[in-house]
Image (tube, rainbow, N blue to C red):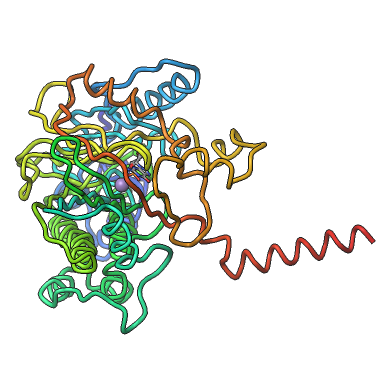
Length: 479
Ligand SMILES: Nc1nc2c(ncn2[C@@H]2O[C@H](COP(=O)(O)O)[C@@H](O)[C@H]2O)c(=O)[nH]1
Ligand SMILES: [Mn+2]
C-alpha cells in the first residue's frame, strides 16, 4: 500500500519520526540520524520529500521462497531416517536466505546447529555474498596426502608422531615451524587479519593439528602399494579469529540489509569493501593452512629419511568463487577443477581410522554441483555415541575397534567419540556416492595406523581440580 503524505510548511523544524516512516524510511539507526539531519536543515514541503527520496536506505531484503536443492542422501534405518529428517528440515529453512540460488546435500550430511544452519555435508551457492557461517568456523579444514617413493608405514607413522603437535594452542618458542614472512606481511595488509591475536596464532600454531577429529593417518595405496601419509586439520587459531571477525561484520550487514534472516546466515556483500577484504583474507588463510599441512609432511619426510613421489591437498570447508556466485562448502569436497588451482585431478575423502582414505575424481553434474562427500559423517552426537557404548570400558572399546591398526592418541587418553563406531557406515556413504553419481573412487589408501589428539581435556588442570573436588565431596557424604 502506498501512503500519500502531506508535507506542509507547518511541519518545518518539527519533522517527526512518524513522518519519516510515512515518507518511506524504515525504523532503526538510520531513522534517528535522518531525523536529526532534516530538523537541523529545517526542511519541509518539497525539500523534505526530495531529501528523503535521495537519502532513504534501500528497502531491506526479506526471506525468499526456497529455490530447491539436490538431496543426495538416503536412509536405511531409524537413526539414518532421523538424521535425514533433520538435514532436510534445516536445509528447507536455510534455502530461504535471500542470497542463495542453489544447494546440495551430500551422503555424509548431518545437522550442525539450530534449524536453518547449513548442515555438515552441505553446499550452497550465494549471489554476491560471502556467508561466514556457511564455510564453518574451522575455515579451510582440509586433507593433504604425501605419497612416498619407498618408505615403511611404521617409520612414517613414527616420523609424523615426532613431527606433529595435537591439543590446544600452539608451540613453545624454540620448537616452532616458521611462517613465511611474505605471508605474515600479507596478513598485516588485510583489514581482518591485521589483528594481534590472529598474527600471534599464525606464528605459534604453524605445525599444529588441534583436536577433535583431526588426524595423521598412514596407509598404503591399493593400486601400487606405496606408503602414504594423510593429515586432516584446518586453519586453527588464525581461521577461528577470522571467522569471529567475519561473523561480526556480517551481523552489521544483516541488520542493515535484511529482514528475517537468521543470525547464523548473515552475509558480507562482495561488492562492499569488507566483502573484497574478507575474500582476500580467506585466500591468505588458505595459504597458511596449506603451509601448516606442508611443514608437517616435510618434517615427516625428513625424520623418516624418505623421499616424496607426490603431494596433493584439498580443502573441504571453504568458499569458491565463480563470477558473482560464491559456492560455500561446509564439509564437502570440491571436484570442479575450476575451484582447484593446484589439483592433480584427484581429491581426498577420509572415512574413519580403520577404513581406507578414498582418492576420488569427478566431473561436474546436476547432482554433485561440483562437490562430493568429505567423509562418513555422524548419525548421532558425540554424547549420544558415548551413551550408546555404555557398559564397556574405553579400553575395551578401543581394543575392539582398532585391533587391525596402530591407533595412537597423542595425549595418551582414549577418545571413544573418535573411534570408527562414532561415524556413519563407510560402506553406505560409498554406496550413495556411487548411486547418486557424485564421484568415482580411483584408489584407496589402506589403513596402517593413525594419530589423533585424544581426550586431552581429561588431564587439563580444571578437570583434575573438578575431579578432586567431586571425590572429596563423595568422601564427606560417605562419613
Ligand atoms: N581416516 C580417518 N578419517 C576420519 C577420522 N576421524 C574422522 N574421519 C573422517 O573425516 C571426516 C571429516 O570430518 P570434518 O567434518 O571434521 O571435516 C569425518 O566425516 C570422518 O568420516 C580418522 O581418525 N581417520
Ligand atoms: Mn575437516
